[in-house]
Amino acid sequence: MSASTTGADLWEVFVRPRRGLAHVHAGSIHAADAEMALRNARDVFTRRQEGVSIWVVPSAAVSATSPDEQDSFFDPAADKAYRHPTFYEVPDDLHL
Amino acid sequence: MTSTSEATPTRGAVQVYALALGDDALIASHRVAEWIAHAPQIEEDVALGNIALDLLGQARLLLQYAGSLADPPRTEDDLAYFRDERAFRNVSLVERPNGDFAVTMARLLLFSAYQLELYTRLTASADPVLASIAAKAVKEVEYHRDHARQWTLRLGDGTPESHLRMQTAVDAEWPWSAELFAGGWIAADVLAAGIAVDPAQLEAPVLEWVRGTVAEATLAEPQAGAAVSSGREGRHTEAMGFLLAEMQHLARSHPGATW
Image 1 (tube, each protein chain N blue to C red):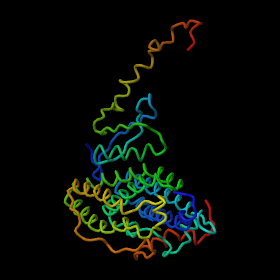
Image 2 (image 1 turned 135 degrees about the horizontal axis):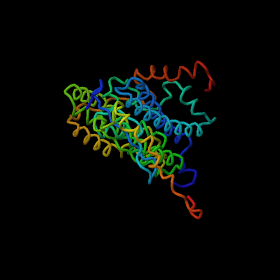
Image 3 (image 1 turned 30 degrees about the vertical axis):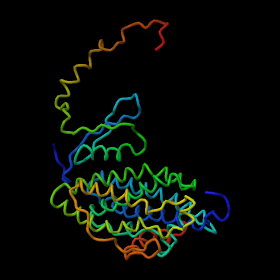
Image 4 (image 1 turned 180 degrees about the horizontal axis):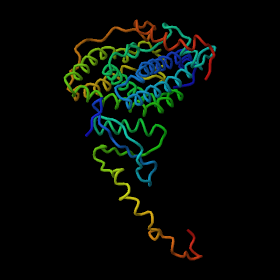
């Protein structure tokens, strides 16, 4: 895990805004361990009642796609219009 | 308690009580706020900012109430910015200079443990205003106490350097906590009417909790006896004048200034 100059590691913070909603990535913070990470996240990201639950994950535990792989990962989806469910006729009685 | 005139404490006696609790919160808030932009991490800056603002909020409510009981009434700003040192009733513990981060955490450990026990009991006060201020504050100070505890555990049971600093801080601050538990300054009728909490009741639960945390942090309880302090009577340590000079300077230089 990458240690900063203050001896604290980086953590990714996920906040659940309300019951029934999913945890959403809110940002990242520094902390020496998981307990302090939760408290720092509380102080930084839920000062204005933004959440009812917090997850913290060591940033080093997150595997991410590389910007270099952007073309092969995402571009091929661009011309596959048939993947979008837009070719079905919606019956008139069905109100979406 | 009752509405008979003899049993009802004077407004002045309740005012002194609210003023002392408000001054504790105000001066503690100022010392914590001095850390902002100097904390070990930016995350701690935010945490200390939250704690300082919680304390300032408590101070505002308590000083507003104390001011409303004064004759003629005074505003929270009158009380915070236009009183001189001898009129402040806070304990010496909260005015002591910051020192290093361990000192601030040791002081917060003692002060928030005291405030939590105090406010928990004050929610049952016969004075509805004090009871509702306490009900709002009790969750806030529970978090302050947890914050101080987390840092005390990590610094005490951390590196040899952090252990030494945390022990030095506990040794220096603990003796000043004795003044929190002295109740001689509270009018007897305010206690008898169930308006105030007898501070002597708080000593055992507060120190039991602090002892537990200090032991878990591999620190030793200091052997020194209680520090002699008389902040509740308005006689403060040398640090208080410098604190007030900084805190009051703007309001006194520009009376009536607003944002």
